[in-house]
Length: 216
Image (cartoon, rainbow, N blue to C red; front, side, top):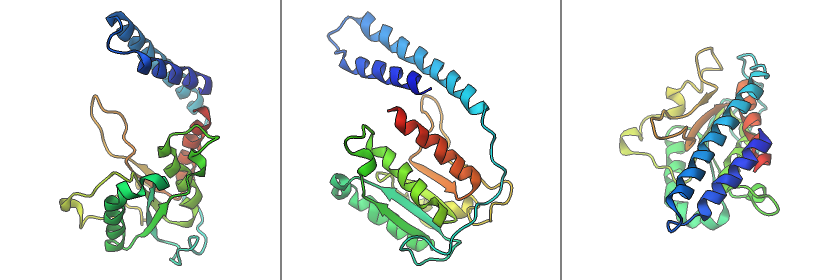
């Protein structure tokens, strides 16, 4: 899948170089090629994933406290990651999520160490949150990983997302190890807000996801 993804990214970049002044067949032809290659990569990845055995539904052990958090073992934390040059832009959203975390008794993690998405790595900044999630997940009951441009509508201010999803239920069967928002066509899976439980399956999900970081 790594090689397939790399060729797909090259096609996507080539599509970006085609200007509107190019013949229509160039735009449509390359676009169809991108979609075809994407479908091929999805089939290859599906075969790879089928070889893995999904871990048993059991919660992973927790250490006594998160690094520097001073909190108890059963805490859920909101995690937001942003590169230093974007902190000023996202500050209102960061303040909002910090207040939301305090409102519902959750920890709050703000990661600005962008080493994993800086040269010599060629990774998009949004990979930063996933590296951060892997770093902190073992220290909390669950993480609510949030894009720094996400906001909370007033109707949801008094609703605890982790509580609704059963993040405090101790890994009981039926409670999700990973939860994302629903979507409809033509949208794709959106990872702007993701709940990840500190369980074997939660870590398994992150490991599979972070494998892809090396493909870029």
